[in-house]
Length: 410
Length: 173
Image (cartoon, rainbow over all chains, first blue to last red; front, side, top):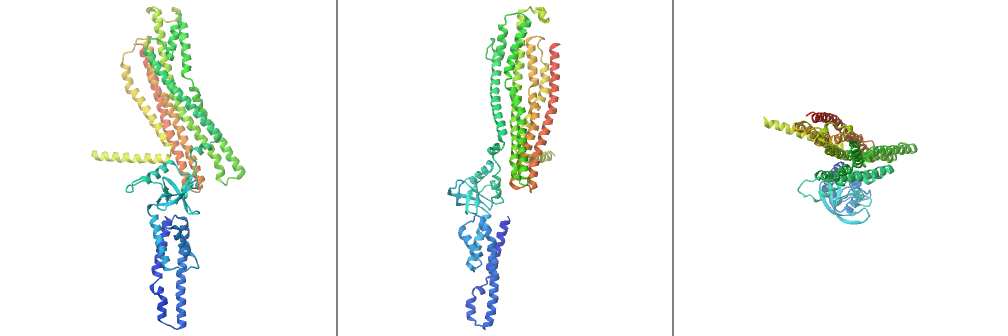
């Protein structure tokens, strides 16, 4: 708000200058002097004092105008900007003698700017798009802080005296705020982001890299991690669907009396049915072999997921180390004076760490879920298989033998 | 009296809500997944304790199938599955929480470096903000993770004890 204070002070100074230093007697001096002839020496003395007084006044006006000049060059002026700038130029020119009319204009201009800085207003102005095309657009002005147009942030460029659309817009949440604010009802309250440094912070903020640039910062190791992550996610999704379907089929199998070959339990039961022997040990071995094969099928891919979950943070660490090597090489070459030179390596180091963690955490979770699912299915499978085995042995053997189950009793 | 109590409670609730909001604000974007995972962990833990303390005693009162029958084998397997449900997930979640904290640390430091690059390192408040973000997420992740580990061991012990009891009941009716 320093700017506003300066403007207010200057306006007061200008008012004071107009009303206090231009008394009617001074402005109407030539006529008054003509009516009262005086002695030449007296007239000369009066002329000198009056000229001195005026010179002081002109000097202070010139000084004020010169002080105002930078503000008038940095600001998007409300009203006719060109004529206001010209006025300031004229008033700060040392050869120009200001008139009362010009001072009134200056006063009006300052008043105008103060009003504009203190309010939210819309006006039409030419706006340069990032591709260089100028078009007349409706611009929303939030005091002296920020300019919005069609939900995008603008910056004022003093060199071309135009509003320029920022080629990179800030984060989406800020953009949403800007868009909603333009649509909001004028009587209600709405939140919007303003930039107190009148555009400078905004232009710095948009230099923070977006997601794509961040990923590019990760370098080769980063792409490797992301590729691994994508592969692992796809496999995990595939296994999830498959395990769900297998669980459904096992439940169907439990309902039906005949073994079906589309599910693990059905396959184990079919092996048991096909076994053409009454030897208890052979039956046990058959079922156990079928079970271990089904278990291996159920747990397919899961060790790979565990491997990825373990490897991804290590790859992230690898990226960290390569990034730090780059950083130290930059320091060795250029010294540690410029933080910008080091930032590339540091970014790579940190981004790969993040990528490693972001990959490992969900895969760890998925692995745990899938492992739980497959182990539940395996336990169910084992229970039903051994139950089927017991039932078959009961059928073959007389019931009296039930308690004595050693292989020798058959 | 009751009105005053309610008022005290409401003001306490409001204050703690404010605290939580401040904490989320300080911790940065990683606080939200951290919160989500913590809530999931709490839900699973509460479900488990409800199961062990409320559902399981009722289940044990039911008649058991005769020993060495196929029904007993299946019953034992289903009991094991029910006892072990979610336990693995609880263990994994308690392992994930410190990792999320570490993730928050790294993102906090990235933000710090970004801001240093833009505004220079003269402004210590900028650096302090990033570093506090880094530390708060680590703190939250460690606290919730340690809680999860402790609870997991308790639940695991309970599950094993119940398993043994059920097996004994099956063998000696």
